[in-house]
Length: 151
Image 1 (cartoon, helix red, strand yellow):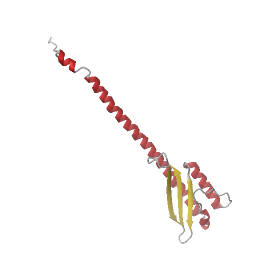
Image 2: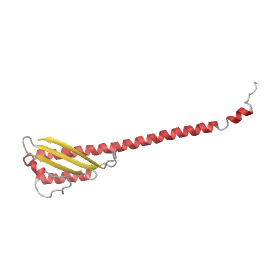
Image 3: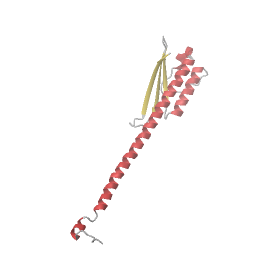
Image 4: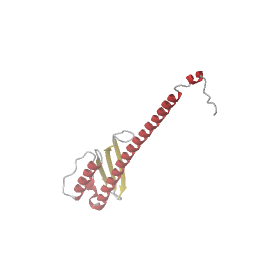
């Protein structure tokens, strides 16, 4: 049986606790990496929420534009400014605007909208949608999207 060689006592004393320091450094590197992954996940969630709000705004803009196209003869009756109260009349345009503004308020946080119809040949319609996107990446509270089309 071969003899077991051991390190001299002076060498053993200088290496005591080295593996503990290596483990602590590895844990530090691992924890920094996990914090980076958590931040990446948070950013992805914020961006997904902001993208969802922009998609909702686009869908709602197309909704009011389709309503105006369906009632093209009374297109100028769809004019409404931001922060105006929803119309309460019985005309098709007023009912469409009320339904659209209600959809904005329920689909987008602090959602509001405006429609500007310029009569002429061709008729130009500008739809402006505003909502609170404070959860978005840049932290800006008010987002405004404007869509312009010709009828």
